[in-house]
Image 1: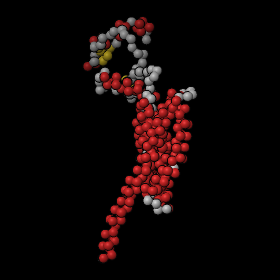
Image 2 (image 1 turned 60 degrees about the horizontal axis):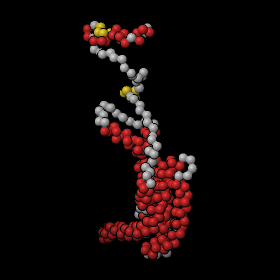
Image 3 (image 1 turned 90 degrees about the vertical axis):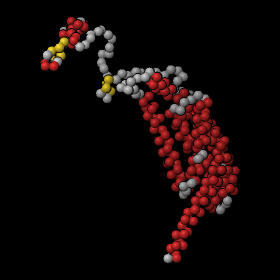
Image 4 (image 1 turned 180 degrees about the horizontal axis):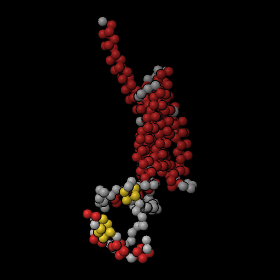
Length: 282
């Protein structure tokens, strides 16, 4: 193209397009030409024109807060339905990870239930152990809220760690009580009481060791401590609250589960008894 045509805007009026009947129509007949600033290239995503807006995090704000603020702003401006907005890069990975976390936690709990069910040969007592986890989750979320941390990826990793750390308290007591119940034929109340008394010291030792190991991460020592601090706060808070509640809730849950197990066994035996009688009479 001649250089003079690139400088003069009026040169665009010399462009003709084919109309109906094959007639040539100048561009100025149906378009208005005005000089303005525009992009040199139009990006496309999925065959649609797309514009990328980048942002950085302000000091003291997390990625989750930034994503929520952008979503609120997009809802307030009343954008048309033909305009679609989506996150890319780190923000997109953040949303994807949050959407899959409930599935991962559910899969982890199911795996723990299956392993404990095979270990104890029971469908009931694995639930007794897993019911000790809600107190740890409440403690972790409470400490994150009190100290002003969001439920970030590192905090969720801390919740997953609590599944393995906290359930060992219940395992220590339930395993001891079941051993007394099956070998020495103790009553359930006496077995779980002895388990709570004799296993108190090892439970306290392991819990305090885990708290002291995680406490430097919760306080925020070392390089990159801002990233790891939610993990430490979640673990420490979950351990403290669960330790205060597990020693009381697990024995009570065990007794109710044991009574339910006995009731279910009696009910099953009662349902089988009429069938055996009717078969013998025939």
